[in-house]
Length: 285
Length: 314
Image (cartoon, rainbow over all chains, first blue to last red; front, side, top):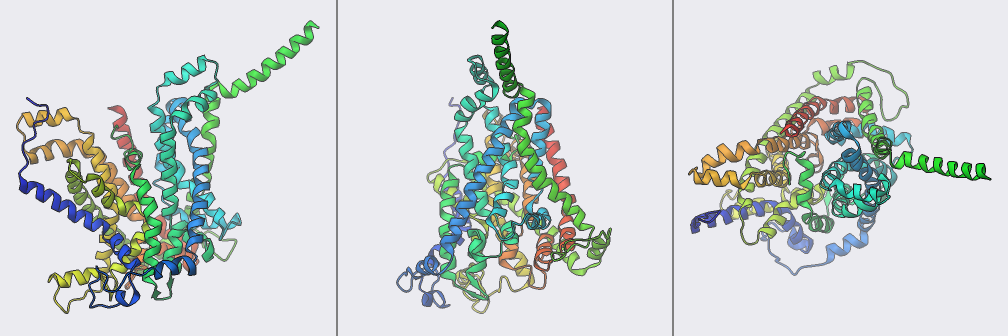
């Protein structure tokens, strides 16, 4: 008898399975499909209610892309996002790698408690903190500066990064460091020479994760920054591509699409790893 | 000569001991490695949290540099305020309804995705997009789809005959439809994460248990309700708790789609806190408004601790 007896699926069930997935996939990707179509549509085609919105009634155009790149601060916002993201990732790694290791290997009983305490800090959402934080940022003279974001963003990347890294460090057999220590390394030396190199994939996960969180962040940026050229892409696009009530939908959609796609592609390769960070060890593997 | 070399050796030894005190003494090293992160979290999560409480009981505004305490004045004023009660009611309605829909849909989607089929990778990419893409940008896509004049959704509905020729709903312009839209977009955005968590839960059920159930002749629904769901309960709890926190505290969708309107029908606590605290500069009232979420977050934290403790024991 085979280990997993699989009854032959009826063709009807397979069609139902496929159709329901298609509905979900359509619902999930519809806004992005709509962005894609809008990006290349001529205005005359776009703003005509009798046209079928899903096909190109007139020839596709690159006008919206030209507008986005030449006449808006879009490129500047992308650059700001990359700059803040890079700095936040560096700070996050510098704080979270030693902290995660310490909690797993050197903390003992209090390490476990402290770990859960740190996990709970990402329940204290930015939405409770943004008002007092605006005051803290003002007191430090960082208002309307990208540095305010560099300072504040690790407050939501560090706790999650520590938690993710703890999972990775736990999976490393302690014998490895002990062997290195017998060979004459100090505990810290063993951590730097042995543990960090074999945790590369965990560290890379943290890098991707922190960076996407920075790209997604909205409320702090909206609260701290007021000058158009200092926005990140998530806030700049919705705030400044809308002039009063006039929406430049073509440019707006092009901006949304271009800023979303790289994140979507990269994230997909790492998604399974993030889940372990959310499940609080309730699921192993 | 002998004493000199001795002393050199001993200073060398003490320096080495000094260093090894840091690098080999596990308690000291452990402390040194965790300290920067703890200090940072205390300064940028702990301190603002305390400030949030202090501000809530004060009369601080954006313009002034000093302030005095007014006790429970802000809280009292808020509770008696009509708009505040609407925002509180909207928060509860929005959170509860979208959580229920997300859970049901995520469970269905996870069961659909757990099977192997051709093109699974592509389907997964498409389904994950709403969660992965920057939220504010995805929501702008919805803003354009729910446009009062050019909505492609209305066009589809009309041309497929689901809407009559004169029926062209203003999704974001009428109170009930606006709330419906906000919930729909939130479901759209939360569904991927909830599904992935559910999938992780499904994957964690040992094959032997499923096989045993199959051998015992348990049907699909019996398996679903007596094995799958009970075994997934802890992880579903985690998904629910995170979902509640994300739903009750996230305002990007509301800020981009409706700004709380029309007539405050989509105003929630946090969006109200943003408009009073930051836009209008009344930090004290804003902080007090946001603080109403604190009991909810504290309750979620306690639940989380319980789950963590239970999984620790087993």
